[in-house]
Figure (cartoon, one colour):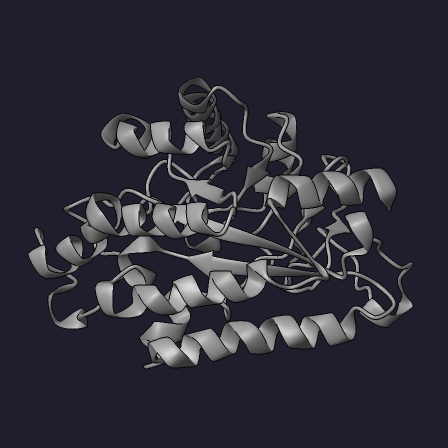
Length: 298
């Protein structure tokens, strides 16, 4: 990055974005995925823990500020108790390895999920301590201690040091990218502004596409139905496939088991995964592998 201390630089009236350059997708060298695939696709599986005494993602705002809030906490808690096990059945059925966006608190609280993922060689990305704590107000020293704890806890539990990061609610501070690189991570998902990976100005750090649109939180929060979701997945792939005639694209499918794996929605996820697994020009992979391939070949 451009400043002496490798940080964003705040001016007296404005803060400039110095993390990445503007790069129109039509002006870039072509990306080639393995096996001649045109679209690299990964399932971003959010495996999260929520605090019982803080507001967070809610289905009913009328009780969201209460402590405790059984309505919304219970809705979220359906994910690790029930939803993820439906998710695992579908991923196994279609031969898909998840890219897990993992709160480090999951390691101690839901060890059966960690073991299931270890058995399936999931890719593990650090996703904060829990999904009720944001590091946005932390000092650099506080954030370094926080990130170190998160990364070390995950590494100890899963047996691999995470290579990727996504902040809870996709949040960062101006210090986060530098600190992640310092801890040995090499890509982030927080900046949902592209259909291809790209290099950040922090040495060794990439941005890999994620999606706030092809994301069950956003879609079902807007009243999308199960059949709508299935069609949206198909439409997303087909447009990216058309775009990728001369250069590869990335499709990220962002999922939360307490939402997409509700009984009345689950079958549409299974059909969507069946559709993706059947495509001849797709590289159905992990965010780790997408980042590594781009790093080595671009």
